[in-house]
Image (cartoon, rainbow, N blue to C red; front, top):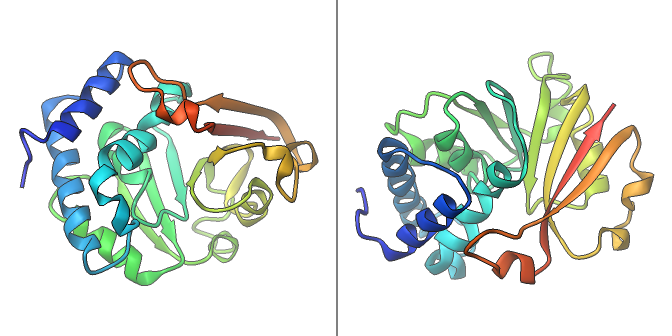
Length: 225
């Protein structure tokens, strides 16, 4: 079902337009259809917090798209959505960037099966699905040192992410993590993460929407060498 007059979806689209993210009608219909399916499937398989379904557009969809606003990505990349859970941010990014190949990785088979169900027939031919723990999947020759770009939302501390993605990453790779608060309080502070060439914090301050910024949410861009 395509929700043409959903005010929450419309509000997100207006925010994206204020931040120079242009979405054509076909992409927007796919996104609305997928969100509708996500909410329906979530009633039987916990993909996102059920308390969050009323705010899914602002708290999940807009949040997932913020990397396209704040980070300068090249075209035609392979992106690993590490610990994808409910397909966030990977599926919205795949819809908006059809030139990317997006790999949704999660250790739980039932979640990957639910994501396949949610995207069936959407026409997102650039989506791929991987079941397994990242540190084990990275030992598979198919995925060993495959990714120059990785992204993780609501997964773990950056020190754990560095360790768990080590075998998946190319030598020169970028890992983007959605974080909040002071990273110096994590078990492994940014300065102690090995093989880091550049570490940038991007506060989530958007034109037309300030809630992320007030909540100290940020994107952490880690470039490895």
